[in-house]
Amino acid sequence: MAKITYIEHNGTAHEVDVQPGMTVMEGARDNGIPGIEADCGGACACSTCHVYVAAEWVDRLPAKDPMEEDMLDFAWQPDPVLSRLTCQLKVTEELDGLVVNLPERQI
Ligand code: FES
Image 1 (cartoon, rainbow, N blue to C red):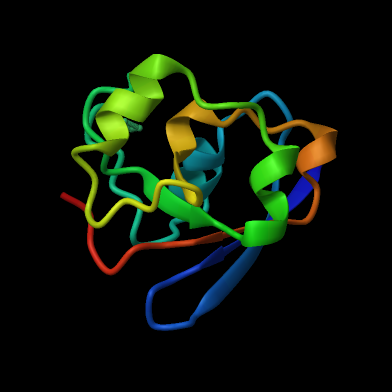
Image 2 (image 1 turned 90 degrees about the vertical axis):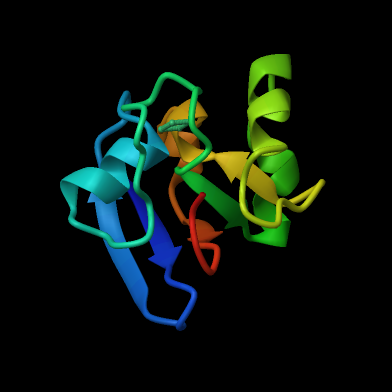
């Protein structure tokens, strides 16, 4: 299991255990965490699973592929360094301790 902390825009933190093999988006969805809408169901086609990764995690995550980069342009106030689409982040044991910050809104 990997412990992942999702922090809502209002500062409310949700620390949950997520099964490796799932995505960070699925971990939020299955634990009822508000703020990640995932309208396209994880197909990298909507940008409503956008988060800002905690700065210390940026270099510890797999690089964005071009499709994720393109879709992030449609997210709410994307950050060139911190923004990720959670449906594109596969959970592994190495992600234990990951912290992600949810944007003010999803579009
Ligand atoms: Fe739609 Fe991630 S769920 S892009």
